[in-house]
Image (cartoon, rainbow, N blue to C red; front, side, top):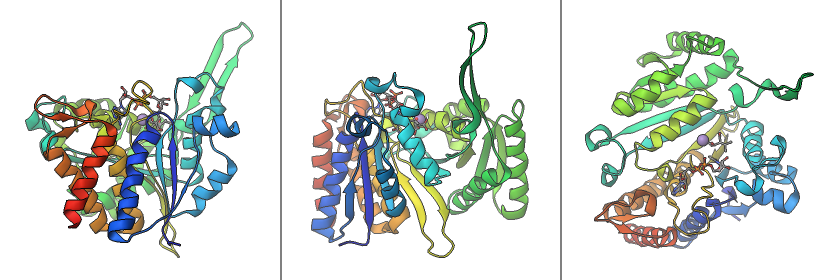
Length: 370
Ligand code: NAD
Ligand code: IPM
Ligand code: MN
């Protein structure tokens, strides 16, 4: 048995379709590079609701806590949209993030050379773009109390969500931002709305203080979230690392996805704190996109975000830099050769299915390994 324990949760909609292509790469690595994983597959989201009546069973949660890394697909869909809040597919993913304490969500937006014309922005604005959005993932309005809906005496309904952040929560994610920036372009934009939110004020003060203590050599900028959304589409190359809260990070990363050509191109890594004795980090890898019900079951989804998430898994959880490079290079070559799923298709390129994208990638890997 391998000492690399992996839990694979394909989820719903296009999740299983894009995950199938990763499984082919995993098999390829076993055969061609003699790298094997101790891989187990589980259910999450609507698939788990249908089988077990809950979006994540306690058994699957326990498995996630003891493996080296979780690879996640996507969850949700119209079939389960009307379920009570706590039973929705999305709760399965939120529970994983919370109980694994995955506070640091790295969402890199990189423009592949062949894709500079696929963005909705002009080529010169995105060519060579490489930004890292660091999204706080276990706090903020996603988890703050109180939350819920109540019906008042006069029949009016009242819904509440609460944005909460504490200094340690802000410090630990800001520290990751400085660490990332140190290995990249040395620049951090901290994004909040300190002009209207108490959490924004605390966020700005805490990041500023940490920067004074630990941010030597890092250029720190503060920016309001609304302006950041605008700046991302005006002149994205001004950014290196963006660190922001859970909700702003969710929205800004979907926005950044379009800079790269498609939401189907954006991977992510969700990391916990490093265990001081083992050096181990809890980790879950997932594409930024969802279950895409509008295209599910048609074999047309772009599998590259899931494949790039797997490359991040190799890099961050197993320090397999060479293998990660190989997967990313193979993807670069496939795109250079003009293969495109429907979401990134342009005249003059070859439109292929999810499966054929996988076939092409395996051929590229064969060439690289030869
Ligand atoms: P979505 O990301 O699923 O889809 C948005 C649009 O992008 C759709 O038009 C879709 O076809 C397209 N798209 C997404 N991924 C693609 C890919 N790999 N290839 C080609 N096109 C792709 O977001 P949505 O439609 O707002 O949400 C659908 C469901 O997914 C909801 O239930 C939502 O809660 C869930 N969701 C889950 C996750 C997750 O599991 N991490 C993330 C976002 C949304
Ligand atoms: C994401 C998704 C999730 C989020 C949902 C599915 C819970 O949109 O991962 O970006 O809002 O965090
Ligand atoms: Mn999202």
